[in-house]
Image 1 (tube, helix red, strand yellow):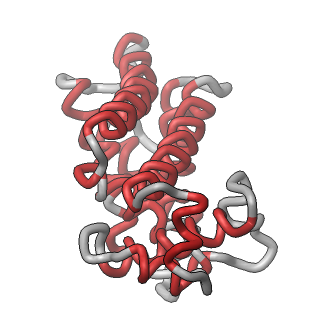
Image 2 (cartoon, one colour):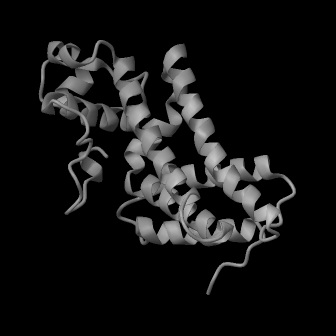
Image 3 (cartoon, one colour):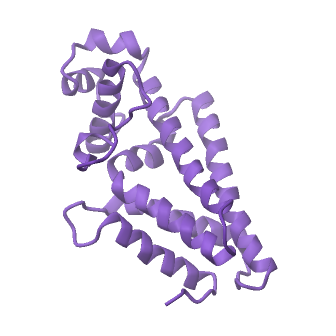
Amino acid sequence: MGTAEETPGEEQPWGEVSPDAARRLLVAAVEAFAERGYHATTTRDIAGRAGMSPAALYIHYKTKEELLHRISRIGHDKALTILRTAADGDGGPAERLAAAVRSFVGWHAAHHMTARVVQYELDALGEEHRTEIVALRRKSDEAVRDIINDGVRTGQFDVPDVPGTTLAVLSLCIDVARWFNAAGHRTPDEVGALYADLVLRMVGSEPRK
């Protein structure tokens, strides 16, 4: 949700981060990490994008890795909330799986810059932070797996390999962050609807017309 991802009427990006200087640095870090990669980005790059001196960055973040961890933690918390909300929602397994995919894909498309950093810079985190984020990923896996298991148990899904299918579904959704172009022909909602349809076919449930 860096400035390049803001759309009219959208909430202030990273509004949960305060004070404002810390938020501006985080937005700048997302942009820099997405464009250059974590390892090729310097703290000077980040501070410059935020209109601050390099020394100002260390007032709010002790290290560049701490910045990445904050971005990754917030992003993974949001992803887990999206998936759990769908998993705990109304409707049968097909409706809940479609809602999960639609929302998860929509977020990865609408916030593709943030999502690229959150999903693909995991290995740049220190061991303690990486372990924390991996635990959140497992909870996201569990949310989707539970829906698919419900569908198999009720006979609505035909899925011989639930863990493998869960991985395939999540990988399909996450990969949207790699290619989505805000100037393209599809909106995030349209991509979410398309992927929800594809995933229902994948699990052997005919999408509603």
